[in-house]
Image 1 (cartoon, rainbow, N blue to C red):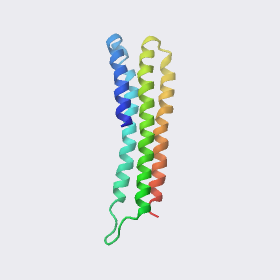
Image 2 (tube, one colour):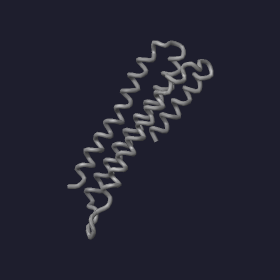
Image 3 (cartoon, one colour):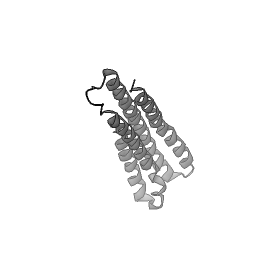
Image 4 (tube, rainbow, N blue to C red):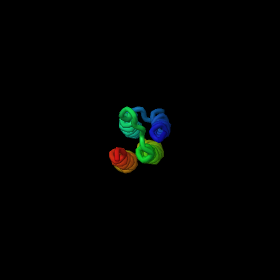
Length: 135
């Protein structure tokens, strides 16, 4: 959900820039690409959780394992929503500001990286929780 919001909000800014300065469209696609990376984080943790869902025969998944999987998914998901929102807002405003003044570009990229790190932290926590779920 965060990746979709970040892509949509950044896309709005890119379409606004494209009408006035079509030469800046390719450099303005970075927020959209960074939003897509957040979706990959969710895909990674969901594949890992789904791989653990098949217990051996005659055994049931413990409540502990279920809650650890839930916590792993929530940590990646909520961090992804925060990162996507950040990338969307910064991408929209940053691309529009870049259209008017090119010096803003490096600052925009740095803020986008800081927003992306929120999702990466959620993925790291989710991976740690998923690795502890087999206990």
